[in-house]
Image (cartoon, rainbow, N blue to C red):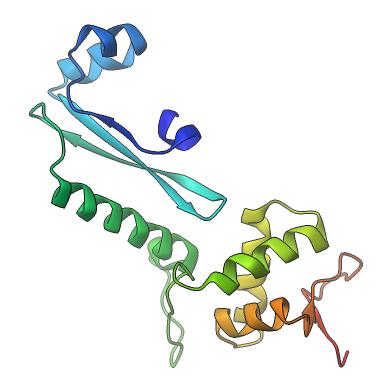
Length: 169
């Protein structure tokens, strides 16, 4: 919960008096199970929080800088897989190329914010709508996002089963 609410939660030794006082049920239970350190990384894309990646270690100690960078890369990869739907074992459609979740494309974040306002949705649901529109229309996510940002595509809250409408609609 700490990582989901406030960012990284890096606990190098769960057996300290501070940890035992902070988590009076959790800390003793995991220490008894052989866990001495926990590192919780939020799975987040911009303002969208998908969950937390928890890493456990049997020995106490901090993560070295390279280990932390590897863990952050793993968390980013998990986000991309969750958003692409490949983490569910879903088969990839023939001829369909999966693309990154938009982590390096600021227009995806901008379009998500615009759709959030247009539809009165949370950022997470707005991103789902953006990705769904791209999928249904067999378009790349960042191309659809560019159209939203350029105001060539608007998501209409009045639309019944249509996710968005173009200027030409």
